[in-house]
Length: 437
Image (cartoon, rainbow, N blue to C red):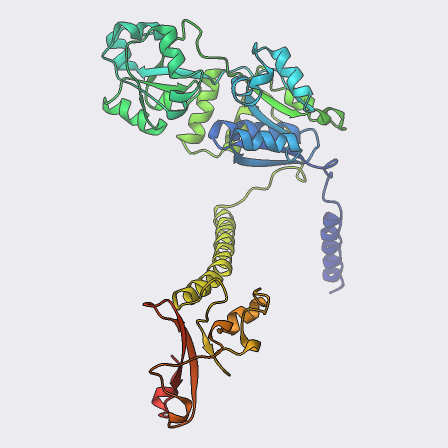
C-alpha cells in the first residue's frame, strides 16, 4: 500500500511539474501576418508564419483577411505587421501617384513615408499573361502574343478587371495591333470555355494552379507590355527594432521561389486539396529551411470535428445577431407601418388608435399644445389628437344606447372627405365575443 501511495505521489509530482514548466514562452507581442483572399497569398502567409516562429516569436496568421485595399489599410493602421504583395499591385493600384517611373527606389521612398518597408523580391513573378490550350497553340504555331495578329478569327476572353484596367486589354490591343474583339468573362468560366473549345485565348495569372490542370501554354510577352508583378513581403518598419527581429527570417525567403515551383504549390493546395499549412511545411523542408518549433510556439493542430464545431458556432452567432438586429429594427417599423395604415398621420390633425377615456382629451393626446410630439411611449399608448376635441359621431351608437354601457371610442380619417371623426363602439356582452381580437 505504501509503495502504491508513493508511486501515486511521484506521478502527481511529475504531472504538476510538467504543468508548471510548459516550455519556452513567446517573446513579446505576436507578429501579425495577413494574407489576401486567394490561395497563393495564404500559402505565402503560412510560409512566413512558420519561418518567423522559428525565431522564438509568437505569430498570428490572419488568413484571407480581404482584398488588396483591406489588407493594405490594416498594414497602414498597424492592425497587421506583414503581408505578401506584388510590385505591379503597389505601382498600379496602391501607390500609383507616388511611383510614376515604376522603380524600386520610388517604391522604397513611398513606403518609408508611411513607416513601412519591404523585402527583396521572392523570386517569381505573378503578373498577367495570355494562354491557350497546348494543342490549339501547337496546331496554329502560336508561341508569342505577337503571333496572335496573324489569326484574326481567334476568340479572346478576358476577365472584367482586365477589360477595364489601364494595363489591360485596351493597351494590349494597341501595343500588338491585334485585330480580334475580346469579350468579358468570369475567370473560372473562361477556363471551361477553353476546355470546351468555345474560346481560344484567355488572360491568366502567371502562377495559376489551373495552368497545369488545363494543359495551357503561356504565351511570351515579346514586346514587354505587362508590368512586372514580383512577389515580396511588405512589413512595418518598426519590426526591425524588435528583439528578436522577424525581418532577418523574412529575408531568408528572398529569391527562394520560382514560377514553376509556385505553380506547383498552388496546384497542391487548390487542385489536390492539401491544406496550405502542410504545403508551407513541405516547401520549407524541400528548400532546407525547415525550422524546429517549440511546442509552446507551434500552431495548434485542429481536428476536422473541432473545425466543423468552431465554424458552426461562428455561423450560429452571426445568424442570431442578424436575427436580433432584424427584430430590433423590424418590429418598431412594423408598428409604425400598421398605425399609418390605420389612419395615423404625421401631424396633429387626427388619431388612429382607440381612446380609453375620451376620444380627444388633452392628457391623452400625442401632441402637446405647442404642436410637438409627446414622449415616445405616449406615441404608442395614445391615439387621439386635438383636432377631434368635440367629436360628432355621425351614425354611431352613443354610450347610453349600449346594452352593457361599455364600449370604446375609435378615431379615424374619412377616406372620402379626408376629415377626422370619432365613433363610439359598444362592447358586446356575450362571453364568446369577448375573445381578444
